[in-house]
Length: 267
Image 1 (cartoon, rainbow, N blue to C red):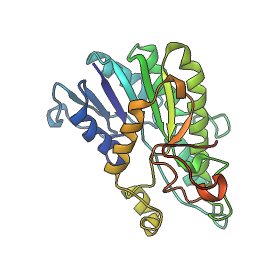
Image 2 (image 1 turned 90 degrees about the vertical axis):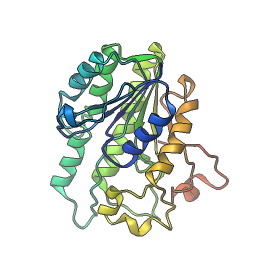
Image 3 (image 1 turned 45 degrees about the vertical axis):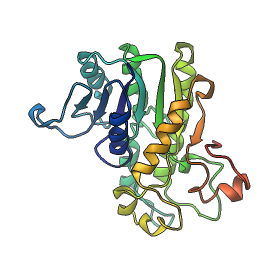
């Protein structure tokens, strides 16, 4: 069986991934959402389960998730953690509360600099409970904004909390890959693409959708699933853009022309 777990599936990319995997996987598709919904209102079937009340701001999210998955007898071949938050800011008016909130949402516990990040606890509990299959894959959905090398004067500075949190997530992915390699579990970090979502619209980035080559969550999900299908332990700990450089405005100035798709991104 090829069970799939999508953490953060209530909307956007996560929701699109769920819908596509439901059509294409032979195992069970598990999704998590933050909301508390009565079991009687869930659309659970033999091959689809919604696990509610999984809040990545909570330290207990990992143990709670593992406990519920164990009750279903899950054997997860692919874990995709795709929850996120985006709050804009600039040098003239950096936002203390928004930066703190952004780090907590990504589970940078205790302090910003210590980087005890939530996906570590999710993955820890899943692996320790024996819920991730041998040769399993763990995919952390990051962003090209987490690449330090790709930051360029053409786009300027700002967005400190968002970009720094993605860089921290990239580091977490790299470290997890080292911890899990001997168990045959591959860890990938991905930039799924610039998307036409409520999140990017809410911060005013819809004005860049057309010129920036933004795609729908369904399009991003399709290319990500295709990438994951060939991702294995040989690429563990690497940082990739499955859709290539097409929506990364700084790719040309920093990396040059005639770049491949998929594109391995620099840290």
